[in-house]
Every structure is written in structure tokens, then in C-alpha cells.
Image (cartoon, rainbow over all chains, first blue to last red):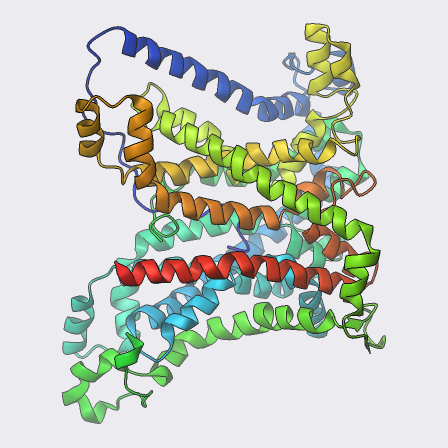
Amino acid sequence: MSLSTVPPAAAVALEPGRPGLRRSRGGSKDYVRIGLWIALLLAVLIWSVPLVFMIFTSLKSEADIFGTPAFVPPWSPEWGNYVEAIDRGNLLGAGANSLIIAMFKVPIGLFISAAAAFALSRLRFKRQRLLMGVIALGAMVPIQVAIAPLFQVIMGLNLLSTHLGIILPYIAFGLPYQTFILYGFFRQIPEEIDESARMDGAGNWRLFFQIILPLSKPALAALFILDFVSTWNEYSIALALLQSQESWTIPLALQGFQSQFTSSYGPLNAFTIMSVFPVLIVYLMFQRYFVEGAFAGAVKG
Amino acid sequence: MTSTTAPPRRASRPAVAGRRTRRLARTGFIAALPFLAPALAAYLVFVVGPTVESIRLSFFEWSGFQGAPQEFVGVKNYVRIFTQDPVFWTAFSNTLVWVVLSLFIPLGLGLVLALALNRPLFGRNVFRSMFYIPGVLAPIAIANMWRWMYNPNYGVGVTLAELFNLPWLAEIQWLGDKNLALYSIFAAFVWQIAGTNMVLFLAGLQSVSPEHVEAARLDGANAWQVFWNVTFPALRPTTVVVLVLTIINSIKVFDLIVGMTGGGPAQGTQVLALWSFQQSFTNHEYGMGNAIATVLLVITLLIVVPYMVWTARQEKNS
């Protein structure tokens, strides 16, 4: 998962709690539960401090930021911060770059990974487990190990600061993790399905396109979403390969804005909020894929 | 499985359709190649190639500029980073501190949260979400949020100091103090990663059999005994996965540090991944940068390869 800041969400679909937990007979259990609940509530409140602080600041005028305590809500919201962030930070241009890159990287990368995982799990050839191991190893090695020579490769191809020049390495660095997860998923599909398909005269390609891929829709959907998020968030490869400001993705634009307008706290926080907005939307739409861990892999091993 | 496989054969021709059903199961490498080729090509060109090249370059002196000569210097780069580069050792020990701390704090926190939120509680899904959300945000965005929180003039510390009348709290330079900055950044890392660990542990907890827990309870075990004797052993595979993921994620920590301090003040928050990057790209010391990258690679492999062999063995046994 070299590419992912997003974790491999877990294996099993989490059941909504153990059913039929006994109702406590005495009152003491209830106290424990209430105590636990209050502790969790406090923890959540602490956990939300950075987000609340950011949202408040993004809506305050400069005078309010300097003049009022941090946790006083912005009673008269200053939406101008958002306008300023969009104008000065080239947010739309960077957003378009990020979107184009993700739109190509995610489906193509997923398709290539699925094809490789199909060969590794449903066809038989020598040393295939070793090959899977070598590919999976790529998911564990830090990107920074290869980044300087990677820069030379992309420069040699004359693709620095281009969409293609970042999509290709993104696909490559996303492959190991996705192939590994799909390999695990494909192997759970019963072999009898292959056999009966082959009896009907299906070749490898038909087996892949008409049987294995459709059966794997849940895993593919989950990987698609996770991969979108990690592609959107990726910073270090982009930092090395996207040199010109016009080619910047959202994380680079955010960092650029931060170093250029260090003390424009309102617009900077507005920029940060807008930069995470697409990911938050995706998260809220597909929450179960994340928190309920709708797909397999890491934990099941 | 491979031991019974015949040597790679050509893809079966339609002409031998009669034997197809038996043979297609082992079509050989040639038939698999079209499916593997795009992935292997991308992997070789952009991942394996640069990694090997990075090892090669670690034995050369080079500015990184095209056309500039690459001079073979043997192990000189390694001698330099180990004996003459104080920043390397700062980066090394900071990385080590980071790994060790993350094995305790975010991991323990994730486990505790998972145990608490595995019970039926009012608003449980909201709780889970709130802890998990930082995990989907870009680290660079998190870095900017926390940088603002640590602002010495208008940040959270100052506000709390005024609120509780604690002047010393306002004095703390969260990111400006060389000895403190690493831990301040680490706090952001905990915030980012604890929810992820929680989700992994929650998934693992689903494999704990309720019957066993119930049986232990009936035998008079208290909550701690149930956890230690029933829950924890069942969580062992999950714990190993979380441990390995934590170590890997800690070794490559980069974005948070770039976004909050850039390695400063006075290299106080320098880590290996960042120092390698800066040596190559900022200081144009490709040899040194790639030597550090190679050290990073070796450390990673020392952790990951035994783990993968162990997993493969487990799989075979089961």
C-alpha cells in the first residue's frame, strides 16, 4: 500500500454488535456503561478539536482571529476567506488536475491489478506464489526508497509535470496492494465455477470478464473508493514529479498556499477544508466500506 | 501446489478441445502472460527498476543533473552517512523513536477504542466515525491543521492558557522547540492513525466467539481474565497485522513532517525518509540520498520478509 494513506480497511463485514448481550441484572453494570459512554463522549470531543478549530478559523475575519479566543464560534461568518483561497491558491486548477489524475489512475490501475490477480489466483503456472510474494513486497517498501531514480526515469521519458507522468507511477505503486487484496478475494471464489465455465467452452478471457469480475464487484467497489482517496491524498511522489505550478495536485497546492501565505490563517484553513471536502463526501457516501470494513484482506491475511 | 505442476506449456490450442477441461487448469505461464504483462511491466519499470537503480547509485557520487558525471566511489557514501553525517543519526534515532512510540500509543489506543465500541452503545456508529475520519484525510492537510493548532500566538495552547490562567502553557513552542517538536508531530500522527487501528481491531474482534466469552463468564472469570484468556488470543493474527502495518507506516512517515516543520528546527524532526529525499533533491547528493534510501530498504525488508514467510507458513498449515 505504498500509495495509501488510507488503511486497508478490514476483512469481514462487521456485524452490528453481538446480538442479545444480556441485560444487566443489577444497576452496577449500567453505571459502568454510562461511565464508558461519558468517557467516549469526552474522547470524541477531544478528537474533534482540530476539525472544529479549523472550521471556526476558516470563517473568521482577520480581526476576529487575532482578537477572539480560538474556541469562540465565528458569529458573523466571513465567507470571503473561501473566495480568497480559491482565487489565490489556484484551487480549481489543482482540483481539476487531481480529478483527471484520479479518473484515469483508479479504473486503469484497478483493471490491471485485477487481471494480474486473476492470472495469479485462477491460472496455474510455476512459481506463481513466489511471484505474488514479490509483487506484494512492493506494497511494503516505502516510496522514498525509489523516488530519486523514479524522478530520473520520468525525466528521461520527458514526462515531468504531466498528467501521464504521474498517472503511470501512481498505477505502478498502487498495483502491489490491489493485486494482493484481489488475489485473496479471487481465491475465495469456488473452483467449481471455473470448471463448469470451461466445460461450456469459456476461455481465460471469458472467465475473467464474464465470471470472475462480476462476482468480485464488492471488492472492486471498495478498492475503487479507497484508491480514489489515496490518490487524492498522495503527496511525496507528486512533490518529486510535478514541478510546475500548473501541474500541481491538491496536496501540493495546499502546501504551496501554506508556504506562500503563511499568516493568512483564515484563507489557509478555508483552503484546507476545501481540499479535504471531496474525500469527506466520498467517505460519508460509502461509510460502510470504511468503518464497517466491507472487504477482505489485511486482517484475514 | 507448484510442485505438481508440469513445466510451462503452450496455451492449449482449440484443436485439443477434448482435453481442455483437464488441462486448462494448468495453462502455463504463456497463457497467463497477457493478464500479467501490464502489471509486471508497470511494476518493473516504475517500482523495481528505480529501487535497484537506487542501490546502484548509492555506490556513486552524482549531483543528479543529467549529463553530470557519475563517479564510482565504492562504499564511501555509506562510510560518510555512518561516520560523518550527524543528521543521519538524528534522523535514524527519530525514526526509531517514532516506530517505538507508535507501537504503544496509537496501537493501544486503537485496541481500547475497539474494545469499547464493540459493545452495543448509544451512538456507537457516530463514535466510530468520528475516530476514523482523520484516517481518510490527506496527511498534508492534517499537518496544516495541526500547525495552526500549535501556532504560538493564536493556537490552542494560548487559548487554553488564557482560559485556565496557566501562563507557562502559552510559553510552550510546540513546533519551535527542537526537543519537543517531534512529539508534537507525533500527536498529530496518533490522531490520524488511531481510528484506523480501531477499525482493524474491530474486524478482528468479530472472530472472537461469543460462546467462549459467555462460557468464561459463567466460570466466574472477571472482565480482565476474559480479555486476557479469551479475547486477546483470538486477536493475535489481527495484532500481528496491525503491528507490521504500524511499523511500515512509521518508517515511511514523511508528509506530516514536511507539512509541519520540514525537518527542523535544527534538524530536530528529521527522519530517514525525509533526509534521503532532501539529500537527493535539495542538496543534490544523489549518492548519499540513495545510500540512505538503501538503508531504509534494508530495514524494511528485515521486518517485512520474515513476516511474509511467517504468513505463508500459517497459510500452508491451515
